[in-house]
Length: 378
Image (cartoon, rainbow, N blue to C red):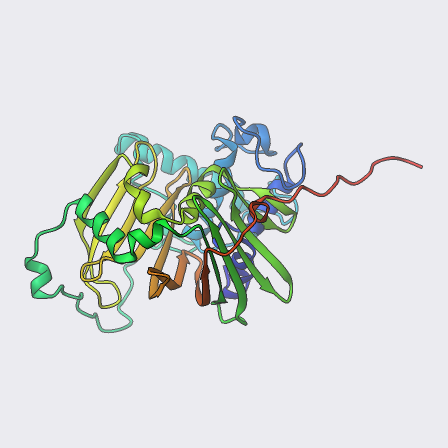
C-alpha cells in the first residue's frame, strides 16, 4: 500500500486489520447482514462468491490470507480484484494468483511434508514480480550489535525467573490494586497529521482504543469476551485471530497472568533492541502461532512483543515496541508504543495516565448495528 492509503486504513482499525479489505470482501457476500463477520463454521466457498482455491478454508481465514498476499507482493486489493465487485474474474492477475496458490501448496506438500516453508513472500519479497536476481548493496553493511561482555557471559534465566522479574519490575503489588486505566495522547505516523487517541482499560480484560481525526472516530475494543472494531460499515465483531490479539492487549495485569495463558514457555538469547541487551521469551500453545516477548536484561521491563495471526499461507506479523516507562501509582507504565506491520507503522505517545477512575462496563460494549434499509414498496 502507499503510505497515505495505508495511513487511512490503519487508523480506521487502529491496532487491527485493514477495514477497507474487510468491508470490500464482506460486500461481496451472498447473504447475511452488512458488516457481519462470516458465519461460524462456514467455509469461504459457502460465505463468499466465486472462491476457488480457498473454498474449503474457514471463512474467517479468507481475509487474513488476502492480507498475507497483499503484504508479500506489496500491492493493494485492486491489483487482483475489481473494486466493488471482488467476485469478478476480469483481471488476469486474479487468475494468476489462483495458479500461484496451487503451486505453493503443491511445493510444500511434495517437498516439505505439508509445512508452509514456501510462501508468496519466499519469491516476491514485497514486489509484484518475483525477485530472481540478488540485490546489490545500497549502503555499507553495518556490523551486528554485540551484547555487552557481561551479558554474553551471563547464563539465561528460566522462564519463571524472567516472568517473576517482569512482575517485580512493573510493580506487582501495586498492579494488583489497579482496576482501571485511562490514557490519552497522540497517534503519529505515515507522514500525516497527529490524531488524538484515548485508551481505556478495565480489569480483568476489557479495553477500548478511540482515535479521533477530522474525519471522525475509529474504535477498537475487547469487551471481555470478544473483540470488535469500527469500519466503513460501522461496528462489527473481529475474527477469532483478531480477538485473541485484542484479548492479550486487554489484560491489564498481563505480567501476572502470562504463565497461566500458555502451555509452553521457552527462553532464548536475543539481539540488542534500541541499544538494550535483551532476552527472548517464546510463549506457545499447541496449534497456534507463538508469542515472542523481548525483555530488557537490566530492568526486566518489556521492550518488544511480536505476534502472528494465522493466514492460510503463513503468518501475518505484528510487532509492538514499548518505551518511555514512567511510574504511575507505583506501577511502571509504558507511555510510548510503536506498532508495525508489513505495510507501515505508527506510534502512540501518551500524555496522561490515570488509574482507578470510574469506568462503566457499557463503554466496552459493541454498538447495535444500524437498522437494515426498508424494502417496503409504496
